[in-house]
Amino acid sequence: MFGINGSELIILAILAVVILGPERLPEYAAQLARFVKQLKTMAAGAKEQLREEVGDDIVDMDWRKLDPRQYDPRRIIKEALLDDDDAPRPAPAAPAVAAAAATAAGSAISTGSRAPGRPASKPAVQLAAGEPAPFDSEAT
Image (cartoon, helix red, strand yellow):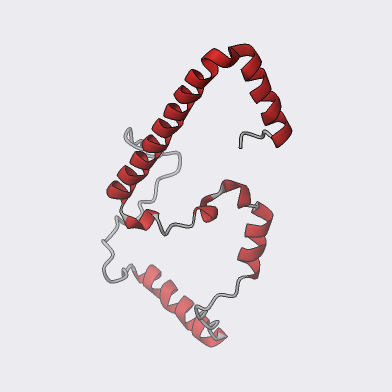
């Protein structure tokens, strides 16, 4: 409690008796008790209000998972690198299939055809020698 051990608490009690005197000590002790009761009531009210607004999920939440002191970047990276993915990875394509796909893509580009679902783009315009490139004032 507040980092005070037993011997320090006894010393503080003796100092309170000496400073306040036996006449005013019961009065201050009663005020302290009322203050502690008010703090407990306020804390219980805040907890109940939070539970009403957020729901009962807040009760089951593991707050230790959200503690920023537990995050060690080295450990996180190590776990990410050593983590076994359960998702199947696509098999690498055979060289003949990859070459056929490249040839088909090259012929589609050279013939000017476009992929289905893609909008047609403007054909490339060849500039004459020494002709400046067009300027677009809206380009970034």
